[in-house]
Amino acid sequence: MGETGIVKTNGIEMEYFRFGTGDRTFVILPGLSIKSVIESAAAVEDGFGFMKDDFTFYLFDRRINYPNPYSIYDMADDTAAVMKELGLKDTYVFGASQGGMIALVIAIRYHELVKKVALGSTSPHVKPWQRKVVDTWIELAKAKDREGLYQEYGKEIYPPAVYEQYKDFFGDVAKTVTDEELERFVVFAESIPDYDVSSELNRIECPVLALGAFEDPVLDSDATMEIAENLDHRPDFALFMYNGYGHAAFDTAPDYRKRVYDFFMKE
Image 1 (cartoon, one colour):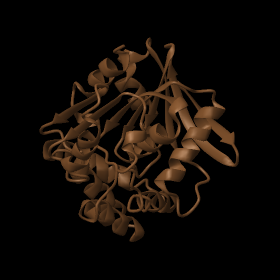
Image 2: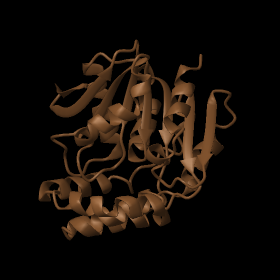
Image 3: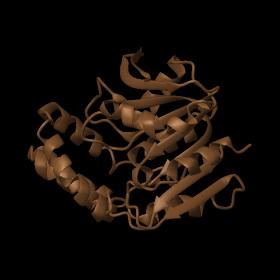
């Protein structure tokens, strides 16, 4: 089992989970979540376990003492500051959904920190019509409708069969959500409308892998394809699109982590 720690630097406090013994450093930036990703650290370690001899992993949560508002750019700058404080550089970064947005900003602004980046179900910017799902989540969280939020969240990010399998579980977890967690979720979700790096993708210097899903009701497949349209002229860019696995293909597709692993290990 890995270990949990808190980094403090320049007024920033951020929790992380470290596991693995490999020489290469693998940074995981999770998507928008209702509860802290650190609560699911054991499941993350289990999912990436086959890579533990090749990589040392750092799973980062968002900042503990976050401001309000808290932009995607600020999240990226804070994560970069924490990475520097831990002495990390030339890392292999995987960002999922909102974590992919953060990863894009870090790859654009902090070249020395990123050797390769893999982007899962993410976007260089979110158009108004792509925000409908997140806007619904925000409304439910503000209304303190824990059950409604968890069910809508699960329904949108997972394929129907997976959602039905875990529907009762989502209901049980919803009962444990605190007011503070709902407020945190709203602040992080409200960062999405003002985010746009579509004109800066050409500033990324490292190899990029983009993975998306054709059936993605949260951001739509167009989000991933926009990244591809900007980078597919580069020999160090790779794209893979899934069918039938939903927005959270990074959790549901059985070969997903192996694809990331192969891309990161390729010289």
